[in-house]
Image (cartoon, rainbow, N blue to C red):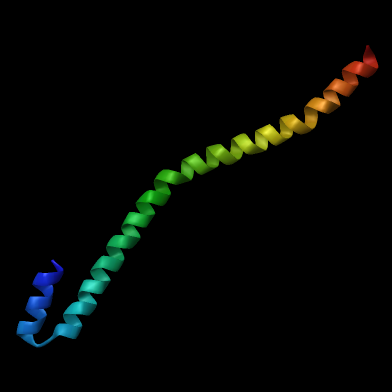
Length: 73
């Protein structure tokens, strides 16, 4: 596609304009690809952070419950 559009730009005498259109096209394609990857990774990040927070909560409360059991009994 790059070669074809460069050829058309040279033939018409508007190489700069054609290269700008090509740059805009690929910029939009990269943005779409990045958005797709982020939308796939986002749920995994949420699950990972939820697991990390849950682990920290359990790590903090287990010693407190163990002390309470030791005092009671």
